[in-house]
Length: 249
Ligand SMILES: [Zn+2]
Image (cartoon, rainbow, N blue to C red; front, side, top):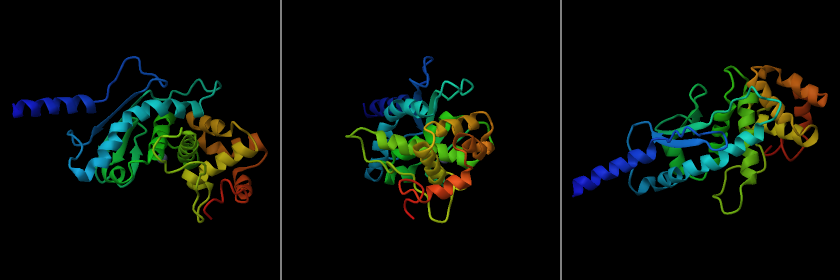
């Protein structure tokens, strides 16, 4: 009886953790699943309760928010963009980062220890889901790849309805005092948000399109086309604009 129950439990775990791949998957109805790098269940015991809670929410949140990630970047002028419609999260140890997304496979690796300690950091998941959606050719600059991912993270984080878990980042992109927009992440996201606020509402979509078209290194020229100013000039302006670039300085 005990052995039978154990076998049954193992089978259930296998069914839960192998990502479903419905033929009907689309960006509006993505296939979302998680597994572990070691081909077994998540660690047990009270010490990993929060990790298991996080994992229990992961597929539903992926299905709920991935379409919003895509919608944030989509435009009718970009038919050559093909965001992936399937996401597999892989829990792993000692990743050396909170999370990493493989641009060649669309697999998102998640650090076990980090998400056990920070099971409410859905902003990190939005960031990585954006990388899955971007599906850019390799070699695009951090301003485009990481800036767009944090831009989406900040705006989606700010739009979550009441009742959801608390999020790490809400209405502001953060940039450390010793960095600027060229470092990507919150700095590049802040500049994109500034240009969107002050100059051109579709500027982030236009920069995203550059990544899709393998033209990421022309982002400053693109910003000039949209605003009449190059990135360095816009950054200098943004540092005087409290809502974005100088936050935290
Ligand atoms: Zn990233």
